[in-house]
Image (tube, rainbow, N blue to C red; front, top):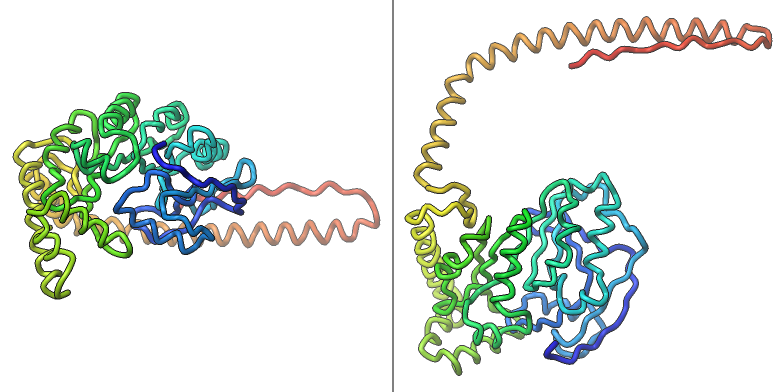
Length: 360
C-alpha cells in the first residue's frame, strides 16, 4: 500500500443497504473509505457521515456484523460495493468481503441471488472457488479507464492495469461473467476503443461511464489537466465550467459523438461483447429481429385472445366446482366436530379430510 491509512473497527447491525441504484436492489459495503485514493472518487461525499478529519482515501473503517448474517428476504439483486472497493488491499487481511460471500452461500435460498461485484483489484481471484458456488453466475466488473500505466498511477493507488486485465482473464477462464467498466471516461484521454480491443477476448460485457466533476475533486482534476494536458484544458472548461446551459449543450454533443464512435466500432467489428445496453452482434439484426417478433405477436394475437376466452370459461367452471367441493368439506368437518363434542368424554379419532386443489 502506497499511503498511510488510519484503520478503525466499527460494529454494524447489517452490511446490506437498500439502494436506488438502477439494476440492483441492495448494496453491501464492507468498508467505509478506500485506500485506493482515486483522484476522481465520487464516493468521497461519504466522509461527512463519519467522524474522520483525514482526507478521503487515507482512512478505512472496517465493518463487523453478527456471524452468518443473511441478506434481507426481498434481496434478489446485490452489488458489492457502491462506495468502496470490496477488494482493496485491506481485504487480504480482514476478509470482510469474503465473509459476505460465505454468508450468502450459507443461506441456501440466496444461492440464486444475482450478484455484481465492482473492483479494481486482482485480489478477487482468491475467491473464485466461492464465486463458483453461486447458483446464478456472478458478474465481476473491473474499472479500467486507460491502458497508460503512468496516467493510472496519477489517478489511483490500485493495482496496475496489467494485473486487472490478467485477473479479468482468469475469472473469464473460470466461468465467471466479466465486465470491463470503462469509467470514468476522461475526455480526450480515455481511448475506449483501444480498451475494448484489448479486453474483447476475455470479457462478456462493456460498460461506459463519462467523467463527472463535482465537489472538492472538481478543481483538483481541472488543475491536473492544466498541468499535464494543457491542450485539452479548453475542452474540460467547456464541459465542466462556464455558463450552465452552454456547458450542458456542449456536454450532450460531446458525449453523443463519443458514444457514436464507440458504437460504430462495435457494429463494424461485429463483436460478441455486449456493450452498454446493446446485447446483439449487429444493431440492424437486432432491430430486424424485434420487428419480426412484433409481427409474430400481432399475427397470433387474435388466436391467442380466442384461446384465452376459452381458458377463462374453463377456469370459471373449475372455480365453481372447487367452491362446491370446499363447502361440502366444511359441512363434513362441522358434522364431525359436533360428533366429537357430544362424545361424552370418549376419545375419538378425527377423520382426516384431504382437499385436492385443482391446478388453475
